[in-house]
Every structure is written in structure tokens, then in C-alpha cells.
Length: 220
Image 1: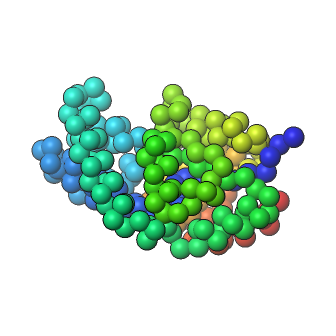
Image 2: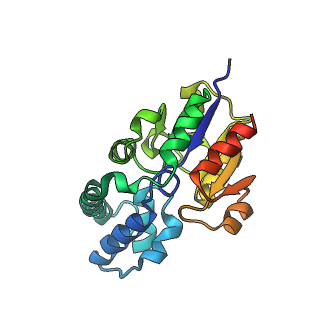
Image 3: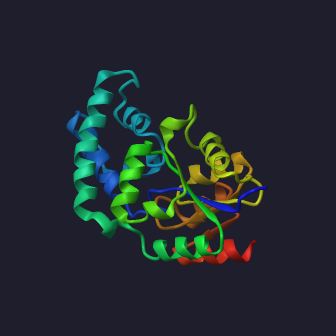
């Protein structure tokens, strides 16, 4: 028997972290000698950190400086989210998750972050207890937009791809959902515009968290 479920991205979908990520990645890359503006980082936000740093800096993925950059980024990033804490929870998210859970749906999070990093952020913003399954990028061989992370989350939840929504703010979220055979819902609280999400294959695009619950429950 398949479990009814909804899968979510994290940054820009549940947490208001896109500006912070862009700022701290840009600062990190700049410190290592490649001047970078935060706006240049936004298109890369839903990718694994090492890949983003490599592409922005021009350093090879196996360059020792990439590991140093990851350490530098994490030091500043963790300090920033620990300071802001619950303020990073996007408006209406907790209430939306409660509505879905009260309706009997399991909640999964699929993210380009590592699982420990995502787990910490979920704790900081106060919704870790609302999440049944968390799949980070290190748990699969291929990250977004490949479907592997979504498939793993569905398997762990006992859910099927067909009819299950994946909600995200990035075009790579939409691409992953479609590749996994899921329904793709975009939300404009993060990295992408309504137009770009629709172009990437979103079946629906919403602006607020409460609209997510409205649409998911209406489509059951």
C-alpha cells in the first residue's frame, strides 16, 4: 500500500535562506581570489556546494582549494543561521506542514545540502519534527536535477512517484520532479520566477506556503 506524501526542497522553499547562501558563497569565492557578486550565485544555489564553488571559482573539483572553500563557507554560514534561527522559517510554512500532516500525508525533504547540514537547518527553523524523511545530496550518486534523491525519499517513505507532488523554488527542482515521474509544483519564495519555473515544467506555481496545502489537498 502506497503512503500519501509530499516532498519539498529546503532552501527557498521552507527556509528563507537564498540571500544568505548567495552572500556567503560569493564572499567565500571572493576571498579565494575570484571576485563574485551574490546575484551570480543564485542560479547555482540548488546544486551541491562543491560543484557550485568549482564552477564559480574556475578551480577543478579536485583542487585542494575547494575543500578549503567549503570549510570557510560553512564557518560563516553556520554562524549566520545560528544567529537568525527561527526567523529564517518562511511565512506560513509550519501551518502548511501541519495541515498536510493532519490530512494524513507524510512529509519528505530532498535537498542539495548534505544531510547533517539540512538537519541542522531544519532544527534551527523549528520544523525538524514535521519532517518524516530527509535525503541529502551525499546519500545518492547523482544530485538534482537527476531523480535519484526523490526516488530514495519515496522509497524510504513507502510512497509512489505517480500523483505525489514535489515542491521547490528552483528550476532544477522542477526538472528532478519530472524526471522522477512526480508532479512538479513551483513556489516563488526563493531562487526562480514564475516564468522560469513554468518553463522548467512546473504543473503549477504558487506564491505562498498556504497555497501549497490548498493545491495538494484539492488534488487528492
